[in-house]
Length: 204
Image (cartoon, rainbow, N blue to C red):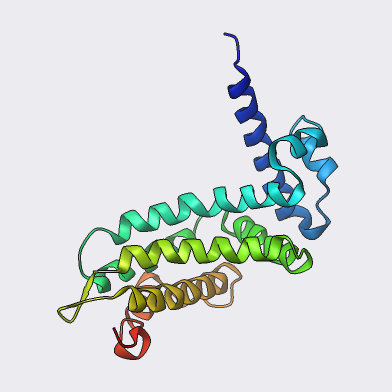
């Protein structure tokens, strides 16, 4: 079967994204564009053609890595109208991800990407914008959910989304790195639910 130009372009794009993710997880800021392209069976010209530059490729890697992760969380959290149940499901999902055989490799990729962003003034705001974008998705999800009989405003939902993401990222890193062996799903869920308070949510 003949491959169309669009199909070939998408195939090359996927190969470069996969190669870049592996290279960043392995080499961090030392990941070389030439090696990324070679591993994908392509040339650096393909990178510039498809992504503009190395930073554009890394942004694509980041977007495609976080996107499905947050989509799973949105589906879990959307199971009911009560925000406590949503953050509970969200937290339990995060804890289960820590037991994934590839969890350490995923964490290596995340930390390496953050290190790259600190060194690259073009990548840094892109990474920040990506994180804010995913927090906005959670904000939208939480807005209108109820707590103690009242619906959360977008302002309250945003405060909760920011706090929840920070809490669960920190707890997950501790489990994956072996800093704690006493953090089961219930602990994650209890810690997340503890954020659903007037002090954290703030005024409407």
